[in-house]
Image 1 (cartoon, rainbow, N blue to C red):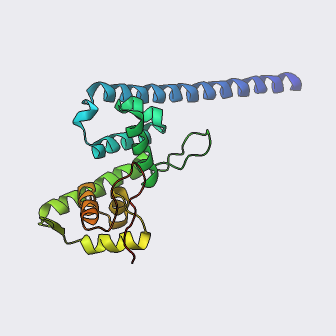
Image 2: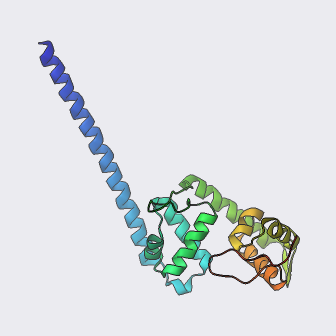
Image 3: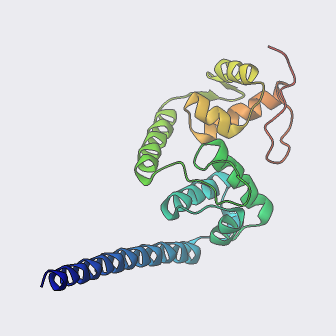
Length: 203
């Protein structure tokens, strides 16, 4: 009688575990289907890449990478319908901005940012862009943050638009303008693919 009862309880436990596993697998399949649909919808509605600037492509890739928890050059190529070199530049920027981890052999890249943190970041970026739009911060060939950008560049011994954006907590457009000013004034060299700009003067 005891053996029969124990066997019955064991069968019930196995059945419950199987049901739980089935429910978990169903939830995973539903999530993957939802993510695939999100990507398909994006591909259908995305304008031709020539109509989008590099920063907009980066923002789109960032959102989809964080949401799908997937990242590779071929993945970015496919979802954005762009060439390999352009996708590779976006991957470098995602890594530089700590959205993804560094390449580790053939393993998939780690996604370092959560969807909740990305939402907070987007809100912060929007506030920064609004603040910059409210005042005459950039005038002609000058910017009142130029001295700060110069200091950051000389201390780091390198310069790129995403780097200035992150270190100075400013919007992309302003960081790009400051990078251009630094180049025009002979502080940094010209762009060389995905590499940081060379610093041409000493601190």
